[in-house]
Amino acid sequence: MKELDPLLHSQLRLAVMSILMNVDEADFVYLKEKTESTAGNLSVQLDKLVNAGYITADKGFVGKKTRTVCRITEQGRKAFEEYVEALKGYLGL
Image (cartoon, rainbow, N blue to C red; front, side):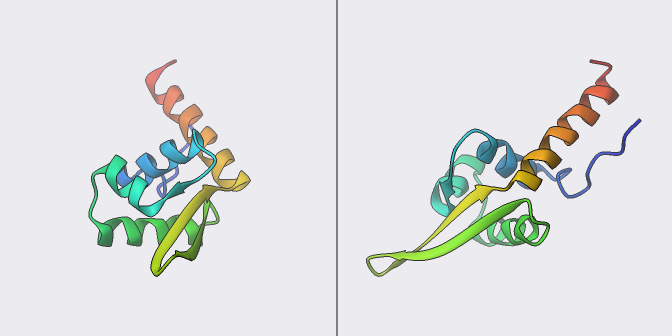
């Protein structure tokens, strides 16, 4: 059986990737609300996904507030699809 990607085998990182697979982009606040995570934990996990090349996180400003917008990369999309296929193998689907 194919090994599950340890980077995606984290509840919060998997949740973020699942969300980003279905939208063009999502900002930090949206991801925080959808995943019900803390800002600190989400920030750390997003950094791990960015460093792996699975997502991009563009930081900018809206007025005086910072805004971070995340998008999945082709590499991230492929990694997520492979993760799902490996999971199906474990489940016998």
